[in-house]
Length: 502
Ligand code: PHE
Image 1 (cartoon, rainbow, N blue to C red):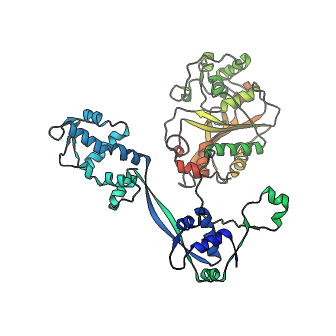
Image 2: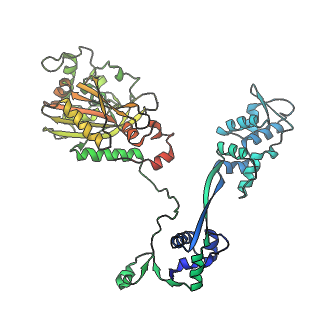
């Protein structure tokens, strides 16, 4: 029989009577454990060895656990500080004990709750007493941490380990040990004599140049062998969704818009025929910035927008007849939607092509003074878009969304009639959350009113929308809370593993 060198080495190091672990064989043969594992799998497939796997529980200190091995558990430090200040005889003020124990931040709460749990003493109306008979040195949790720090497995009750685990001081894991034993066929093969074959694991330029590749035997890849998990850098799931959205829209013939995050109220609201006394324009909703007003807005455009607000636009437009202040229109705020970009582009000042048909989009940040909850963030990304063409209808709008969401595997969007000051008709879009089954709002849309397009100088139909990127990501990843996607509460495992489906 002929075997590659490393397989023969493993075969010779294995025993017919004793199980030998991969690490033991690696030590005797001088091969790397990964190499031994690969060879052992191959030998098993050839029936020359048997392979058993045993799983053992592992226990490791976390960083916090390691810190307490050196500094002492916070509750023990609290106890000792109290003892030093005489709290075994008379109550001492908490502030004093905490200062003496040198505890700060979250350690204070940790110390207090465990101090009480372990019966080290009592806390009453801001004063601490310690039980002079308690003995933090005999604390099984501290002892277990010290044993672990020495690299040994502590011989303690399960509930102690449980407790350390729930405190985040240890990490429980599992490790698999593989051991090899020679089978009868393996013994026979060794008795009959095994020759080695030269195997090559990598094709090199030299092998190619010399033509030697024709004669060598290539090592097979073992795709079942364990490999360490490597966590390289990775694009954030939301960024990947944004990139995907851009690709889809470009594929649908759209061009990208860009523009300022901090913009004048004129572009954010007035152009959209939003009355200046609309609730969304008050300081409750908007992030106003204390900077100089915007001066470079075309005068004729201001005059036309003002006219639309005051007296109306078109044959039966009536306007609001409400106050309209140019000064307010020039004030700067963080944009609450990216429809400000659509206004800039439709007005012609951004240099867009405006001969119909045209399609534009952006995937950009917007800012709203909302209350944080599972579906709301103060900053989020909006997928803005508009299509300019003659004779558009609601069917065109619905068809565009159906085509767009289909690219993400979402085929059941629903539409609901809605009201926007700037579109007529208008409707909201809803999608069903894959985990909760709830209908969540994913966008808002409509056909711009004449009061919007007229002053901008556009004389054909424009349909437009603002879709929420985070909500789309919730549908595609199954995240149930928008805060899992980004921000301080985001779940790192989720960010590592989440797939962007398309
Ligand atoms: N600006 C709207 C929003 O925030 C979206 C929208 C844009 C609706 C354009 C209609 C037309 O939610």
